[in-house]
Length: 226
Image 1 (cartoon, one colour):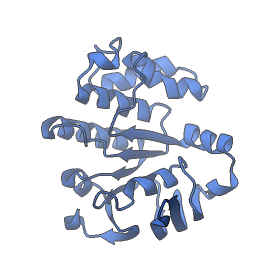
Image 2 (image 1 turned 90 degrees about the vertical axis):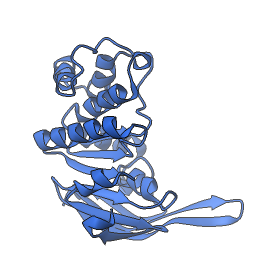
Image 3 (image 1 turned 180 degrees about the vertical axis):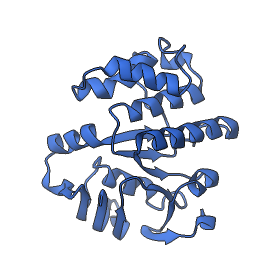
């Protein structure tokens, strides 16, 4: 089992008292799975993704990645797990404005101490169709091009798991469709496990599993529910 959530809960303090964002959640994801998490805004989808990725800690319960309990790791150790095993794609791209497309893609590999970071980054930029835009900065790229850079960056170092939070959310339908194709093509090429939060019904329908989030509770959904 690659990812496991066991009795996972998240509660935050508000001015009106504790607010439970996630009810106890149990879910297991196998290596190579493609999983979509769907649901209304505010249902807890992105919170769950952050917990599974080790970006945030649960109020109670456990997240295990390859049987390693994230709650038993300090922040430096969790960061190492993310660097070694995890890639991320966000709705807002989160590219570094002062770095070129090539430098943005190289960055995670360089931080992780991988050799051959530039060669791998150039190959990934070619795969996403940006081999002639590697020297451009984010403000010189369209939204679709920026997301393609972000996808290339997510796959650098060949992570075991890719977490994507609304990867087509800021794109028009045509551009979103192209980004979606790239996401699944690279996922197949690299054998990466894909966990994606999305409102995009077409993207969700392409995943092997669809998990429905409703008021902090998670359930397995039929494909046509997405």
